[in-house]
Image (cartoon, rainbow, N blue to C red; front, side, top):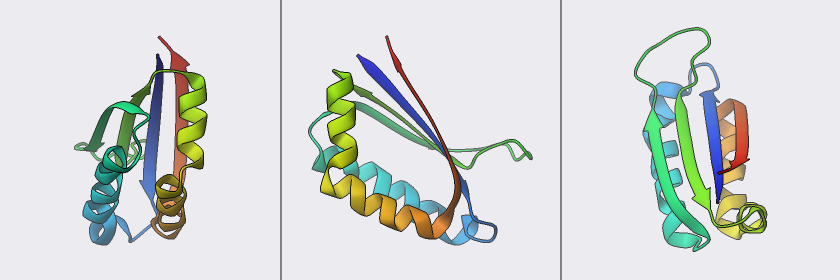
Amino acid sequence: MIKHIVLFKFIEGKKESDSKNLMEKLMILPDQIDLIRSYEVGANIIEGPNNYDVSLIATFDTLEDLKAYGKKEPHIEFFKYLDTVVDEVKVLDYEF
């Protein structure tokens, strides 16, 4: 199994207007991409200079499935939107 963890930090001034929209767009991906085994999206509840705004934790059966997920059209469309509202993205993938 592969765990895929992503942290998103909004562009200054975009958090208030786009937080809900970003989370909604993330939440529909499992319905569109059947490679995802588990999926969790959350918003940060403690403000701080090193804190990110939204997180995604997903699991996949194999590394190949994770790589294929990144090439699926719904994921590509999400990234086009992401570029308009997010300043930083951090990713960690590991096998467990």
